[in-house]
Image (cartoon, rainbow, N blue to C red; front, top):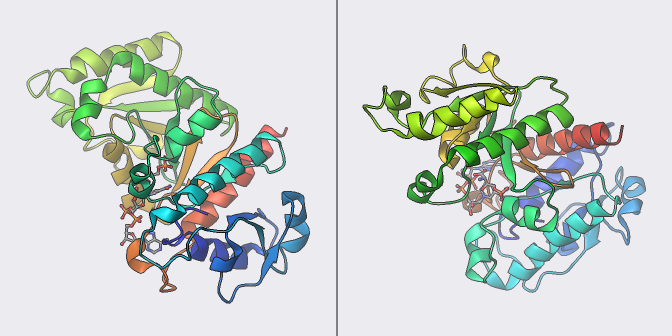
Length: 316
Ligand SMILES: NC(=O)c1ccc[n+]([C@@H]2O[C@H](COP(=O)([O-])OP(=O)(O)OC[C@H]3O[C@@H](n4cnc5c(N)ncnc54)[C@H](O)[C@@H]3O)[C@@H](O)[C@H]2O)c1
Ligand SMILES: N[C@H](C(=O)O)[C@H](O)COP(=O)(O)O
């Protein structure tokens, strides 16, 4: 469902309209069926009923909101329902009743304001369905995959928390997921530096020498094809991108700026390190355009298609 005041329901309805008559991923919407205006909705009782309903109506497992949503206007009264829809989706995936969870964007600050302890889906999903010791957020598109080692935290604390062990652990979880879920036999990891010019031999900061380089050496010792620390300003160029399967970046925006700039419509957020498959569009709640019919469903469609591919691979 995602944030009820955002564009989640709109992109879900548009994705359903795009997918209903073609072979591809079907889905069931977990949330309030009454948020859909002018869209045929099938209130189903079980997720198993979604496939039959899908060609003619958007299947919904109805769970009413506490307050009728107003586009662009956040209402903490609906926070519990947003959280419950994520929990319910995960439970269905854990029970094998759906193949994957695809989340619509949440407004993190509203949930946090009600005492929700997780900074985003990534961390919450890991609390619900962990496999690896920590969750890893990957954004993937045709041209680029990126992983931030630190995720939803202030830049100063992200830098203070960087250690070789954190980089190695993140890179190993990423490597294993690329092998298992993406079918890449020997993934090539490009590890970003932190400072300008990756520290310019220590003259612009010592973290690249003291933290990043030892992590790269350890990954190489483990037999992983890792290179770095790479100067962050040039590692994403058109010539550099084909030389990597994933860029391991050190903080949120170092990873997400290049991919969202290159391919906002095709980018998909995938959580690694879970027992279930979870994807998401790469955009947020877009409160500024909610309710205006302007929301583009391309990234949600890409997230649905990637979820279908990952689920098919796991079911072999
Ligand atoms: N997966 C998630 O839950 C997720 C992902 C990203 C951001 N967020 C949250 O969303 C909220 C808003 O974040 P933001 O403003 O930084 O980013 P945003 O992606 O919501 O919006 C950035 C700009 O892109 C536009 N935009 C976004 N998606 C669009 C679409 N599908 N079609 C057309 N235009 C679109 C918006 O109108 C806005 O101008 C924050 O609370 C953030 O934490 C959640
Ligand atoms: N960091 C993500 C982004 O900017 O696209 C986004 O906030 C989603 O994070 P979760 O999937 O953890 O909610």
